[in-house]
Image 1 (cartoon, rainbow, N blue to C red):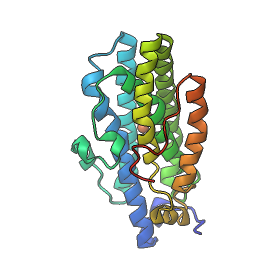
Image 2: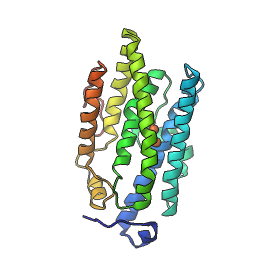
Image 3: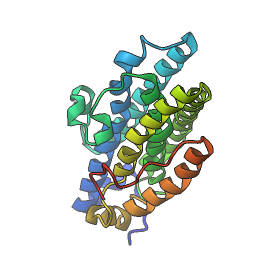
Length: 238
Ligand SMILES: [Fe+2]
Ligand SMILES: [Fe+2]
């Protein structure tokens, strides 16, 4: 187990595997940060139901773009150019959840509630990680993610409060995003995830992080009066 803390100046001396894994994880993180706005800005921003919603969607997108910039800076400093993710089509995103388009408010709400929460989980993997420049950008990003999650939760609750039709829409969106959220943690028993942990770049195994997420989200869904979807049906990465 690698327990040193690494600064940019030490990076060149690191094992090629470390360099490779750090570059890879930063590329995926950058792709996920910019992937959000590319899902909802085009359709959801002009169609926002109120001025306040429009402002919040615009601000959320601006924050994700800034998260991208922060991650891209850390990557650029180690010689990894992630700028290709800015213009890559949605269907080429690293993570399945970002490969479509969001075209209705229930999906937009539940995306914030369930998928921005995955963003928070991904970032929490780097808490106390071995690469200090990455550690330093986390707290500002996570604070903003918490806002995205809260907004998504509030909009989901508003929908449920509208009655049976709203609740059915919320449930349908939860059924869609829940399995995609679970897939975002990757395969159980992943060798690569083991190597991330060996190098102090991640804290938990994929399956542990996924279980923590389930333990957090299921009680929230139940409290909202929604059904917890089948955790296996429709999954790609088990
Ligand atoms: Fe983000
Ligand atoms: Fe977010």
